[in-house]
Every structure is written in structure tokens, then in C-alpha cells.
Length: 283
Image (cartoon, rainbow, N blue to C red; front, top):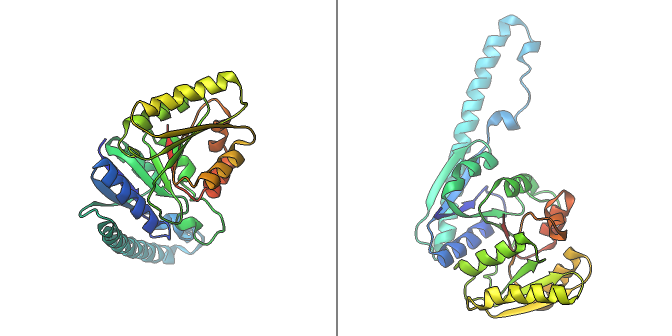
């Protein structure tokens, strides 16, 4: 569990994934791996209709199809190498002199599952190749990757801004407490001003929970601003971000609270797309 893995697909998200991955690599003093996964031509091409033609022509058609798929696979590999070369140039410009280049074939979700044990942090773009031409579209693999991975995931927006302060969405749950512990222990956000937001009723019990959470960060040297707000969770967090100009938000992916709604169904898309800042998602 050592590497920062940046998922590069050649979309417009890729350059910002490189920027945030380079930032994380520097903060964690962790080696950086650039990952590009090519997909099988059969996943993108037309269906095999060879069974609908005469016996005499079928063998010739299949031979041509195999040759075409081999050519497509070769071109995909060459394109992947070019994409990784561009990514290397990008991270070098961001202060990372060297990075591992991984060119794999298959499914990005399965590939990340195989690499999970060596990953310290995975950096993904909110908009992948499938979403480049679709307004406000979240990459098609993002939710399944969030559900599968047991490593922190940093979801990059379509712009880069080096984080100078961060926000933790807190709800008093066990999941939120674990997120706080990981934030407090990790060098990723060390030294940055922290904002702790509890969305719920302003009761004494919630004030006590928030103060206990604040002390977790304070004892590790963080400067912390803590606040309780009522209302819709997504709306409250987005309003707070605008008011305080926070640059990154950390939260748990799953729990048994209102925050869990962020990662179930369409609310996942809403939250990720509403936020112009990167999201650090922890299981």
C-alpha cells in the first residue's frame, strides 16, 4: 500500500487527474503510478453477424474480423503509450520527476481491483472518456469503483487548484469518525486549515459530538473551524463551500446516516457534479 495511482484515459479530465495525483504524491512522499486501461475492441465494435452469411464466406469474414481486431488492439496500445507519455510530461511539470507507467487491457474497475493492495490513494476524474460529450455526466465507471475500492479515492474536478484548506462533512457516525481519524493521521492534508461541518439539528448532543470531532484534529495540530447547519445535506455543504472557499472535501463513502444518500443512486451524481472541488472519499 504505497503508490498513488492516477487513472488516465485521454479525456479532458486526464490533465487535472495528473495535477492532483502529482500534488498527492508530493504530499504523501509516495511513488506515483500512471494507469491507462485499453478496452477490448469487441466491447466497442459491432456484433458478430458471421452466422447470418453463407458457409463459404464465413471463414474469410472471421479471418478479416480477427485481423481487424488485432489492428485495433495494436492501435489502442500505441494510443495508450502516447497518453501515458503526455501524462508523464504533465506530472513532471508539477514537480514529480519520475512515475511508473502502467498500460493494461480490460476493465478499469477490474484492473483497479487487482492493483488495490499496492494503492495508497487512487485519483480519478469525475468525467471520463464516456462523458466528454455529455453535459454534467459522471464517468460511467466511477460509482462502481467507489463501491469496490477499500482505498481512499480522490475525485478530480475539471480544473486544478492546489488545496489550501479543506472541508470534512461530519455527521457523528462511526464512518465519519473513521474518516476524521484517517485525515488526522495522514500527511496528505497536514498543516492545512480544516473546516468541520455537521449538517443537522443544532442540539447540545450534536454540539458535543462536533466538539469531540474538532478535538481529534486539534490534537494533531490542525487549525479547525467547526459549524452546525440545518437543511438539505448537499445544499448545506455546497453553500458552506462557496462561503468559505474550501478547496477539497473529505467524507466517507458509506454509512448509516443522511450522508449515505450521497453514494446511493442518483444522489451520487448530484453531489459529485455540484462540487467544483475534489472529493476525498474513504470507505
